[in-house]
Length: 248
Image (tube, rainbow, N blue to C red; front, side, top):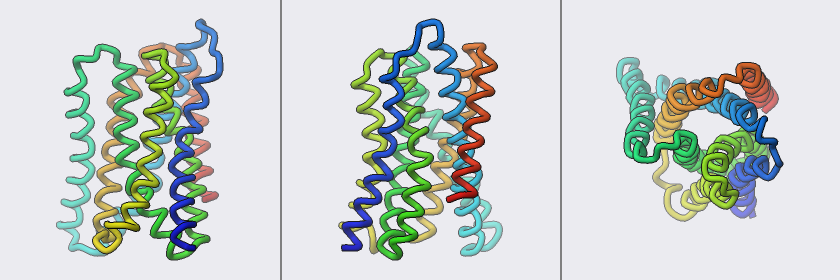
């Protein structure tokens, strides 16, 4: 029964990403679309950076430093972050044929969050099987930041394509990575996954998300020149990250 509970919790945590896409079903006046997009981009940017620097990086760095000699640990940490950042540049280069930078940003966010959600699914499953209370705590924390992550995918894709179907589908695919990670852990990967593998993957994800936020989201948000809404998005994102960090 613990396995079933672990799979259910991982699925709920992952599918909470889809909740973020609900925002596209609200009617926004044409005169306020730029303000809305600016707010969402700033908010999503803070979530990605905040999760990386308060959760992914500290947890992984301490574990790697504990298991390896200092020089080797530093090399692993730096390479993991740099390779993650490099992936963003490579994907961006492949998508330069698409002139709509907002659409490109949505797709980049989806790719980043698929890679992010897969190890989260592994962690939630393993934590839930070991201790259901730990699994509940992990799931709640993941749900809290998965909802705004869904916004970071749905809003750019919807306002660049005007297709609710595309926005919803891409958000759904991102969330689906989490239960897939959990299911694969149960069926195949459980015996092979080590804490170091997970920590390196999480650093890789942190490199992706920080690069995406700074190189893509920030310039796009600034381009709309709606500084008031930019600051509002940053502030609310920071508050949510603090709640996620200190409450959960």
